[in-house]
Structures are given as structure tokens and as C-alpha cells.
Image (cartoon, rainbow, N blue to C red; front, top):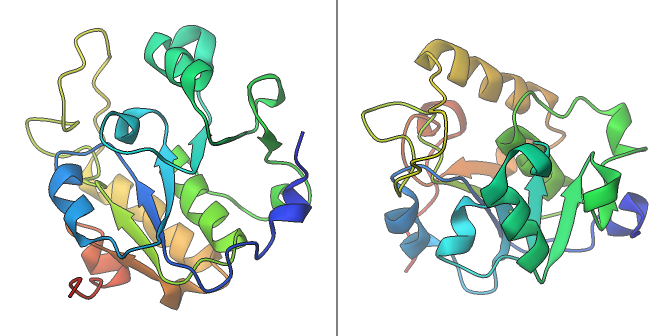
Amino acid sequence: MISISDLQDIHAGRPAAVLGGGPSLPEDLKQIPTGCVLISVNQHALQLVKADYLVFLDDPLTEPDLLEAIRAFEGIKVSRRREWADVELGPPVAKRRMGQYTGHVAALFAEWLGCDPLLLLGMDCYQGGQIYFYQRPRWRQRRLTMAKALGGWKQVKKDSLHPERIKAVSGPLVDVFGKCQERP
């Protein structure tokens, strides 16, 4: 088990991309800078990229796709579920408010790593006809109102120690965090 304390500022000054699973993810990936730390929110992005970190909160025993991804993942697994993780989200991070959903936790984890800027990709807030960038036939489709989805992200901004570092590549989170600069 890697201590969460040992990871504080380990990537200081490096950009990070927190990768959701929304329909915008494939296009958003074209905007990440070279040398970016890649943090997958659950297993979704692992279909498109090899991530450095996999952050998850769900129980892998109830999510077959997540369990398969955890078993195959070659990077560092981060979770409150100690039995599945390389890094447990415990003290001192647990003393901070970490958000309601895995995307929130992954963003604040990237901040803990010292990443700057911190880019949010594929975060479409579960809106529209297609929730993920791919079809998930066995999955219950999560639906949130836009107000509830944005409310959670506004809380992340409030709880962040460096909210100015967080930018969205596209979608509704641009209104909360601002838009990242286009990659040259």
C-alpha cells in the first residue's frame, strides 16, 4: 500500500487530465498537453488511453466492467476500498471534503498530487441522450438534473485549495471553472 501522504505534490507543476466517460471525451483528448498525468474516473477512459491513475469509489464486485479494469490496470489504483487499491484515500486527504462523485474525488486527488493545470475531460454531467462515449448495455443509466450536477462541481471548486488551477476542456463545467486554453 502506497501512503497518500507520499503522493502529495509528487507531480507538482505537471498538467493533469481527469478523464470522465462522457460523449465529449474522445474529442477532448485531442486537447491535452504532452506529458500530462492521466487520471481515469472509473474505467471508462481506459478504453481510449493508458492512464497513470485509476480512481474509483464503486464496489467492484457489483460492477463487472470496473472489476475487470481494476484487475488489468497497470498504473496506480486509488480508492476508499482498501482491498482493491494501491493507495487508500485516507488521512490526511480524508480530512478534506472530497466531493460526492468519483469525478469530484479524482479532481481533488489531482490537486493533492500538485498538478497544474488540472483539466477536466469527458465531464458532460450525465446530460443528453447518450451518457457515455460508448454503449453500456448492462449499466443502469445515471441521470442527474443539470442543477444537481453543477451543484456538486461548484462545491468542488469551493473545497479546492487551488480552484484557479482547474479548467474544463468542454461542456457544462466550462461555466463553473472556465475553459482551458487550446493546445498549440
